[in-house]
Image 1 (cartoon, rainbow, N blue to C red):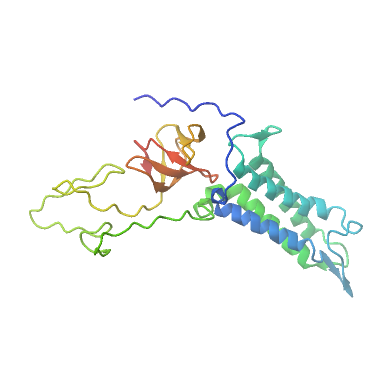
Image 2 (cartoon, rainbow, N blue to C red):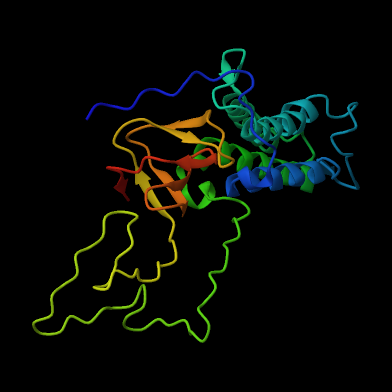
Length: 278
């Protein structure tokens, strides 16, 4: 079987809704680092015997720390978050917003490190300098490696799961005979064949057993496949590439998954044939 047709080219109309559910835990760390950086900007940057020096907003004292550490960190955090709500692949000056944000975050952390090292004579480090460096360091760390850490790639706000109603008089169970429980295989018993991926096992009468609760898992596709928006839009929002691990966060029907890319985009994968589970 040949590879599926490539997805149609994206246009300027291919936009995403601003939704907090598109943010990842890594984005939450970026937002927290930006808040910490904002607080640090109002604290004393250096201290001297007999008194403290003002914050970085006093440009007569700190002509470089404000733009090189704090303002650069604010801009980097804004670009990293704004990239979540833009169509994938959109570039500014030949680079994506994520790339711009990563470069500025690393530069802000480097400048913050030098503000620790190059302390003026007769001055000591103060809270503003230390917290500013820690905030930019966290910002740069998430920008560079956040997409490679599964704990940071998960959704910031998990999507609520609908509660499956139990039949009247029925009680949920976890023992033998229930999904997830161990099934006894007595002597002479005929083992039941495993259903295909996404299928529902059936008993001899043809009635389906209750489906087990979905557990998120990592997977990879054998060939490039389009990822569509959850609202049913026919235009793909991303393309899943072979050799990359993606997170399956939910299932719709026997052969449809709700997948999440490494940059936090969520969508519907209609073709799950041949996928490799991690």
